[in-house]
Image (cartoon, rainbow, N blue to C red; front, side, top):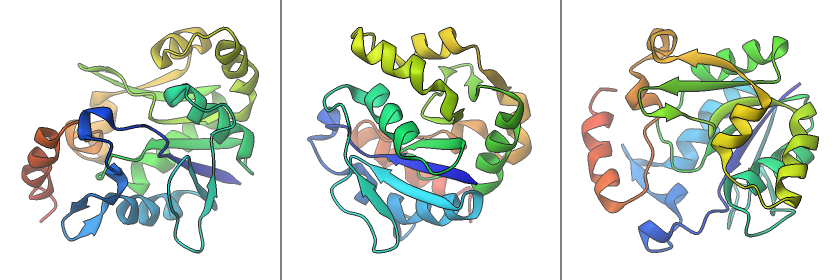
Length: 194
């Protein structure tokens, strides 16, 4: 069984505290788009830290609140029903089932699979084995909350931008919304779908 968690517990401070998963891209919310794609790649789909969830999707709250994405990953690994857990930030509208399935497939032989582009690592669109939970919990208890430091510690398999290009434009696949300006730029990226 493959699990998939949408991390939705952030405060969205740079976006005025709004629920970014509710932003509409191409006529559908980011959350609707993500659930559609994640449901094709995993049998156990749930939301971590969100405000609401559709009736068929589990909603769980952060076990260790206020610890950012690392706390969300901790909860995702703790709550997952599968051994491999796909993790996606709630503000990424263009992730695809094909890419997510590839991350999960590669994770069968790795502790984690994390994309890396010229913008760096992308640990919030990645796949992790539940065996990472102990390291994540230790980092939480020590107040070491930086996701990139976790990535460097666990030594994941890397999927490069060139490898990702087989699934689409890596910049589009990994696009996310941190600010209203980012949201405005999504329309140009959305037109690549049409």
